[in-house]
Image (cartoon, rainbow, N blue to C red):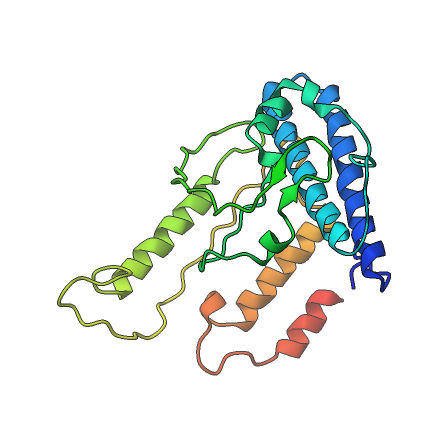
Amino acid sequence: MGSYVYNSGNLVLDLLYNLMLESTGRLQKCRLYEMTANKTARTTIAYLIVRDQAHENAYAKALETLGVNWGATLPIPKTHAEKFPEVKKLLDLGLHTQQPHFGLDGASELAKIFQGPSPMNDGTTLSVPDAPDGFPVPVARERFEEFSPGLDPALLELVQATADMEMAVTPGGATGAPGTTLSVPDAPEGFPVPVARERFEEFSPGLDPALLELVQATADMELAVTPGGATGAPGSGAGLADKVKDKLT
């Protein structure tokens, strides 16, 4: 069991613990909201604040079914997050009172608990709606930004060579063309893997010289022990123990 999993053996106590985690999480997110003026950050944090409230409602409702009477206790703490414009917008949409389900049969066990007046005493009603409609996720263009320089030219060449090789051994490409007969050919011949140049970028100082030497020694050993490089040839591998001993001593 992970150290982040809490289980006392008592269901009420465990649910109280979960409610406490959601409540303190909401409090910390409110503090993070106030620490930044970035609009994107605030919009993101606002959504997390509101969904934490929804999760608090779920645990509180579960505890009600076990006999807990909240009275005017909740919410704890009273952060008054509705004063944040981004949070108020989502509260007005009722996102803190909804727990969408994704069941294919249109039913949800959660709906048996997550219903009726909110235990947060805010006059709202809880509901379990169907899953919201999805939308296509566009593939964004590659952006050569700082710390994201894109593929190394040598690596890009290797990717293209691999694609060309797969197209060559499979008639019609990976899916085949109408009327073609696909077969299972022998493994294609290997090709040399280029070692890309070392890039000394900010926060990326490259391999430690001793580690780099070990990597090079390992590569030399594999090429020496396996005729033909990484793909090898039948009957190769003789003298491996001696080669390893020589390289490591």
